[in-house]
Amino acid sequence: MTYRVTLIPGDGSGPELVEAARRVLEATGVPLEWDVQQAGMGAMERYGVPLPDSVLDSIRANRVALKGPITTPLGTGFRSVNVAIRRELDLYANVRPARTMVGIPRCFPNVDLVVVRENTECLYVGVEHEVIPGEAAESIRIITRRATERIVRFAFEYARAHHRRKVTAVHKANILKVTDGLFLKVAREVAADYPDIAFEDLIVDNMCLQLVQWPQDYDVIVTPNLYGDILSDLCSGLVGGLGVAPGANIGDGIAVFEPVHGSAPQFAGQNRLNPCAVILSGAMMLRYLGEEEAAQQVERAVAAVIAEGRAVTFDLKPTRDDPTAVGTQEMADAIIAAME
Image (cartoon, rainbow, N blue to C red; front, side, top):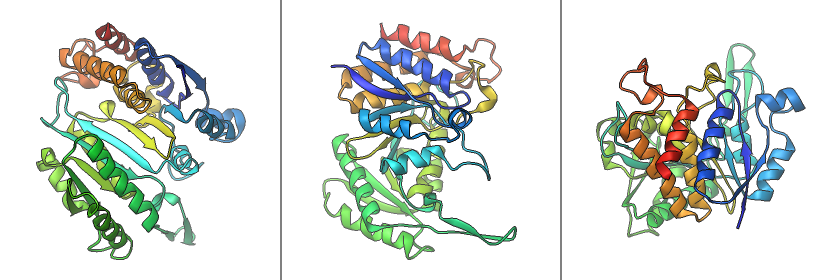
């Protein structure tokens, strides 16, 4: 069968990274038909809105999308398109794996963990206002039993399906006794339904400490929205950086796959950036579609190219000014060749 997939190139460096990933995914031989849709800064300039209805309609129709990074203006301008897509499609589970690969400089050995982040509430609902203009502002943080229960259950089901041993719930219930207190209470209730999987909880600041000292001790980490956003970047740093950090946003029968990193507009059009995060997000998409063999083929090829260390971008070289570093498309070519 042919899979029809919404393809969102994104902003900044996104289009060239997505093009590299598209070529790698097509090289697997899995029949993919791309429904290209524009969102973000380019869509704002062309349509007057950063997230046209056609983008959401396409994802709803196809039920799966591969998305490049999209720029979110700082402080002013339109709200995050990424957050809007997750909210509008109820993509409640943000899944971000972090795994050590041989050949990546500046990484911890033997890390293999997954951050499962609640994706629809917490501070990211964006309910905020100025109390005193220019002097004081207020943001409302929302935690619900429903959202907490389904994300924690998702984490345990993910752990069970992927033969993982432990789920760690992250919170700040010692201070935020009502909101994080609810998150922790519900997490403990759900954990009781999974006696075959170990469970623990950690305060978020302690979680940061543990991750930079003993990351190998952790497996599946489940968090409210804000903590998961922060911790997943930390975990990406443990294994070599955002250039190798894939991600997925999953709801009930619908999913959008995207890298953890941003759009890096300063590198747009330079053919310099590491395409692996988008490529590995594409591998996660293939696995979601049931194409396990193709997903493994892509992951093995990426790992082989990185381990060899020859045809890799500057961030994967021992020094960032290494003259032997290759460009985005050249690294994609090497990955395709490693699949043959």
